[in-house]
Amino acid sequence: MDDDDIDLDLLDLLRQRFGMSNQQSDEVSSDTGVLNDAKHIYDNAIDVSIDMYGTKAAAASIHTAMEQQSYSTNAWSQHDLHPKLSEGFSEVDMVNFIFTMDLLNFSFWSELDAESRYQVEYRGKRWTGYNSLVACLRRALDGGVPITTPRFWSSAQATDEVFKLVFFSATDEQIPLLEQRIALLREAGEVLNESFGDPEEPEGVDDAVAEKGAQLLSAEESDTPDEGQLIEGVEHESEAPDSNQGEAAMSNLPPESRPAADRSQLIGGADQESEVPGSALIDGAVSDVPPESGPDVGMNQPLRRTERESETPVSAQTDALTSDVPPKSSPASFALEAKERKAKPELKPDHSVMRLLEKAEHSAGKLVNLLAKHFPCFRDETRFDGKKVRLLKRAQILAADLWGAFNGQDYGHFDDVDNITMFADYRVPQMLHSLSVLTYSPPLDNRIRTLQPMDSGHSWEVQLRGCSIWAVELIRREILRVHPDAGVNAVLIDFFLYDLAKDKERVAGGLAMPHHRTRSIWY
Ligand SMILES: Nc1nc2c(c(CN[C@H]3C=C[C@H](O)[C@@H]3O)cn2[C@@H]2O[C@H](COP(=O)(O)O)[C@@H](O)[C@H]2O)c(=O)[nH]1
Figure 1 (tube, rainbow, N blue to C red):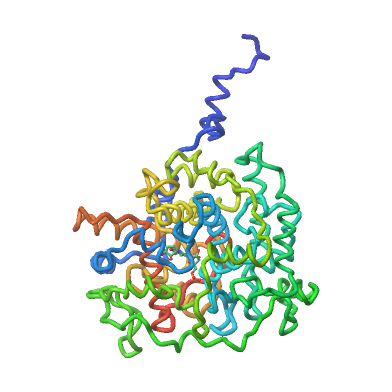
Figure 2: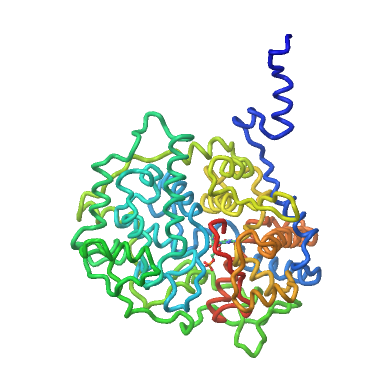
């Protein structure tokens, strides 16, 4: 071999040494590295620590409560707004809905009070937080906008105005990071089309069909006064404040296409009757909520699960702020109404997300790594103590939501779902602190109590997120140490803690300790 020849073996060795191996371009590991990175953060954290006694007590209480409630993946479908096969969603509809949802599943917290904060009107109720996102998606689908079809996002019909109507608010506050959400959808649509699209499928959305979807948005009047339909025609009640670009853009729309916003119906959520009985605090776990401050929702008082089946689930009631209005028909029946009312545009199914799932070969870890590899917006990584750390919250919750929605079958079947960690958001850390699992240094504690934001990537934020992941891992290990057959994993513990946090927030008017405030697309 003379000097000019490239030593391909050496090149391959170097590529593999520096993680550039072209093998990786075809295959991904099933190891996400998140748990190891969380342990690294915990081992080097100085402002967040994990209390052993609090962790043991929380593990016992969480296990008891989960047993009492037979908490399982079934809880996922008990959420009133989550799409269900039984409602007429096909498998591809479900997969695309969940991908869209977890693409945008971040940063819903608001500086405003319950009445003024961003909220979405759907099925005669007002929804906030995570539920506001799910309500937006369902409302758009009811209104004939193919918001969960990836091909639509980068099509000519998906204008900024259309997106802004999808997320339009029942108050003056628009959804946080609206511009970023629109950009993420377009970017993800391009990636899906380029890397996972079906060559036989048309490049863009069928214009005539998408045009009908857009027309439904701006129709002058709907035949049936239907909260579920994107509301058209009525003059926007108030001029959009300058700071609210999204609303301002909408106020530039022709009046007939601006969403109505009848804010007179808003009823404060906090003074709503509590559905969930108050209950003794969790044995052994000291809560931040002093007893005299009113009933707290401990974990040993099972949520009235039957109510969750028949009524808006407790975790969603925080977000249902208005008077009862008979819930809107489900998308399946709406589709029939739409056929009578207008020719509901039938978009050809977009299988690109399904192809992405097939590439993961029923490995949640591979799916998470594929998402991080192909989609910058899922690449939830940062640096801590001089080391790159991966947290991958939305990539992991996407795998978990599929697992929950399909009850671990079909497109929700993952052989390694137990390797998925807690999802490092802002809600579960708050719950872990209120259970005395996480403790904070005085300056961090003060920063959170005084509602001062912290930058994305700040050491405090990374410690909160990493230590939360590790704390849930320790809770999982403790439950299985005492109850080897408990059948819990970090996903179910996380889902349970999130739902519990929402229940406590609804019943106790918010947890005594607020959550940390970072405006971020990562969680
Ligand atoms: N760790 C964790 N974080 C979660 C969820 C969920 C909802 N999951 C549903 C699926 C199954 C469960 O039963 C839930 O019904 C949303 N979030 C995050 O919280 C924040 C929103 O909070 P708030 O503004 O208060 O709604 C935001 O960062 C959002 O990404 C979860 O489960 N775990």
